[in-house]
Image 1 (cartoon, helix red, strand yellow):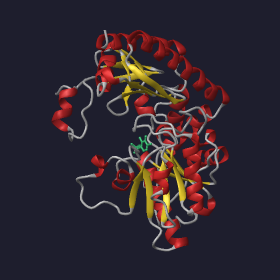
Image 2 (cartoon, helix red, strand yellow):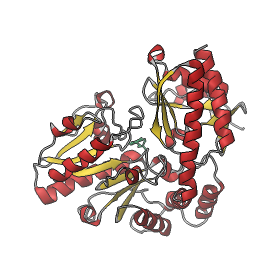
Image 3 (tube, protein in one colour):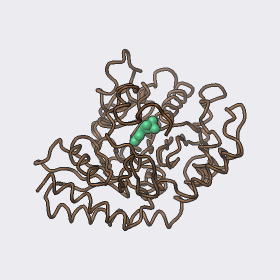
Image 4 (cartoon, protein in one colour):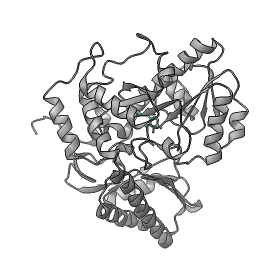
Length: 404
Ligand SMILES: *Cc1c(COP(=O)(O)O)cnc(C)c1O
């Protein structure tokens, strides 16, 4: 290295805005589900860049797609369309309920587009009173001001002045709490078909079908935020496919790019037509580089082999966590779906999820948390079984340190 300064964790505090508190570890390369830090220490990756690296690090098909596109054309803006965007959109449309796709660069931007579309749809069809958006406590939809206000943690949206209006929150898995809020002035309900950041909470069958029915009754749009659950994370290509409920608008990001920033909003022709020319846009959304990688991701994950692999790997994971718990008695529940797994700490370890994460990192395995009481696992969808076993062995050592 030729820099005249040290590139280390201390530099972060010198030069970065202090909105994050990153780990002391700085990974510098990855291969599959392993990665290495500046000191060349090796880690098993159960975090997947927060449910993003759905095919691990440096998957040859993704590297190949990126390399190939990088030698053709990088950027055009939306004055012109491009082949990778058209190909990816066609594959998404052919594989889902949707007829139309809008590309963005992140989850928040995809949700921002979904919310603006819902508001515009309601204004065009039903007039200016139908603006209410119902979302859920503990829900997470991104950090733009609209999406963070729709998200269910006021702490994240407070302190920035006047918020976007007419947004209310119900309780997840409590249909009565939705019933109490919804009316013909409800424009949309935005919901995660399994709450990720909120603690890995699955919807009950009755609840998610009831939400759909309430939307139908009051002419409100149902928006599924599948930024975390989509792109094969739970098993099917999108979570709605297993729920017996079809949304009107669906958003996807995280896994869709396998590590390249991309987001997408999917909807029907009838709803899409309300985003007329000039109503919304993005300079980079749908750029050829990101879309070429997204297409490679879809080609791999939208296959029976990968999707049944997720189920089998999830079972290996859950069995391993139960075995650890049988020895150390730290979890009160192991929940989730597919390869989005939450281990809920029991009463003896309340508030300590971060301690487990830090101890696991020391033992050479990367994990996530979802709130203060849930350790979250979101590994690659194609993680080799031997990496699951090795990672869990390291995780067990971390658990043993905290719960001797
Ligand atoms: C991560 C996440 C987002 C935000 O995505 P960004 O790419 O960080 O903007 C939105 N919704 C859900 C459900 C998420 O998990």
